[in-house]
Every structure is written in C-alpha cells, then in structure tokens.
Amino acid sequence: MPFIKLTKVERKRIVVMITCVICAIATWLYIALDQKYPYIVKTQILYKDEPQKKAFKPLQPDVVDLKVEGTGWQLLFSRLHIRPQSVTVSLAKLNTHNYILFSEQLTQVNRQLETSQKIISIKPDTLYFDFSKRTSKRVPLKLLSKLSFAKQYGIANEVKLTPSYVNISGPQDELAKISSWYTDTLKLNDLQKTSTSKISIQKNSSNNINIYPSSVSVRIPVDEFTEKTVEVPLKVINNNDFYNLKLYPKKVAVTFMVSLSSYAEVDEDFIEAVVDVNEWKELNHHQLTVKISRFPAYCRFIKVVPNKVNFIIEK
Image 1: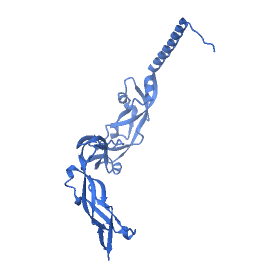
Image 2: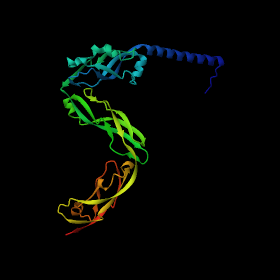
Image 3: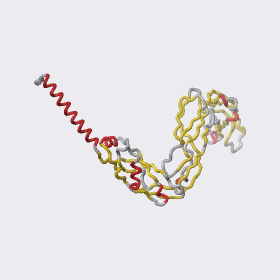
Image 4: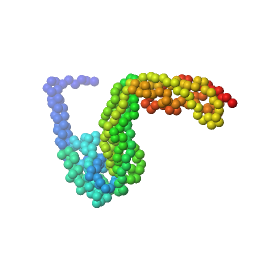
C-alpha cells in the first residue's frame, strides 16, 4: 500500500481545514442549543394552603407533565431530570371547589422555575379532589436506626424518644389504618457513650395527612458490657397431672452480658428458667431441655449450663 507523503505546507493546510470544520460545528451547536424549544418534563406536585377544615384526597397521581419552553441546553439537561424537580400548587380554592385549575396558577408556578424557562401548559390542567371528614389521633412513635458500637459496648437501657407520640390529622378512613409512625433512620457509628440526637419524623407519603411535631429528641443509653453468671432455680411447667418430679440439678448457671451500671442490680430474680413435663410425657425424652422464659431486655444471653437436666418421677 503506497504511503502518501505530504509536504509541510500541505500538512499545515489540512490542520487548518480540520480546525475550521470543528469550529464551525461547535458554533452551529452553540447557536442551536441557545435557541428556545418546547419540551416535556415530568414533575412532582407539592401542595400548599391546604384547607384547614377539610381532609382531601387527590384523585390523580402527584406527577404531571409540564410543557416547558427553554433553551436547547435545558432540553439536553432535562433528560437528566435536573430542572424543574417539583412545582408547588396552592389549594386555597378547595375551600369553595373540589378542583384546582393549573392554568389559573401558571404565573405563580413559572416564578418557581429558572428565569430562562417558561411553562406553556400543564397536563392534566385540572386536579380533582375527594373530601372526607378531617379528624386527628395520637399514635406511638417508633425509632428506625442503624447503630454500631465499639467493642464491649451496647445499649444499656430503654431508648427514649421525646416526645414518644406524634399527633396526626387527616381523613378519618386514612387515620384508621395508622397505628404507629416512624422516625427517619438514625445512623451512629462506634458508640462508646450515651448519645442524644435530634431526628426528623418520616414525611407522610400522602399530602392530606399532617404530622406534629416534625422532629424528636432521641436518647440512646450506652455503656460497657461485661460477663456475669448467676445460678437460677428451675421451674416445672405443664405438670397438669401433679407428678412428683425431682430434677438433677435443681439449678442452672446462666451466663450473659450486662452493662456495668446494671451489674449489681441484675441477679437471678430477673431470670426464669423452666423445663416442660410434656417433653417426657408426649415425646418420651429421658432428659428435659432447659428454656429461658424470662430474661432482662437489655442483657445479652450467652449460655445456660447444663442445657438439659435429668429427672426422676416418684409415684
């Protein structure tokens, strides 16, 4: 294959020509993207000015199609869902109507966008709502958490939420389905001491339910844990025929982890160990399995020795 040799002047002309082509394409692209174009963006609706004496339920999804006029650059980036992310709509007219017209609020909605963007129309233009009796109730608050502790440390007592309840208000039929509410997830790592934090309440997935307060205080008692062993007397359960049952041994050793602050307090009175007569009567076992039926909530069980005991039934 012959190799074409170019002179220095010819090579320079080719470089100049390629540079001109690239500059022309870049200039054309810049001019094209700087012009105005209409494009469609899916956008979430947020509500404000909710009617105070009515509970409402939207009869359509909370996502609408905005026909937006913007530059080619905005059209390009709209594919990445950069703007607009949401629009806020006033519900003030629901005090007298059961619908909202977007076309009546285009001016206010346009103020929420970039100055170079303009909403031409919204689909659907009319939002319809269903109304029901508004009521309120108080429900317990539950903490969602992802906690990790330094070695030998853990939760030493009950986690305290202040307040421990939230007030929710909304449609009566919706509130009847709610028995508790959750916080946002509290994430703490390598805990070595008691921690107090403020965390937000989970936002409602429906616009027609209000929650108060919006945040709570969380106290997580943390302490160092150590191992402890106590002897616990065995109790017999399901001895409905009143057998004269002799256990060997009569006590078992329960080993567990307990916080240093509760070490002296937690003893055998906090623990209950049982054996079940039905294990012999119905299953014909020659030994009875030891089961822990009561145990302190903030201690960590390790083992019970022995975990099976011998027995004699005297007739």
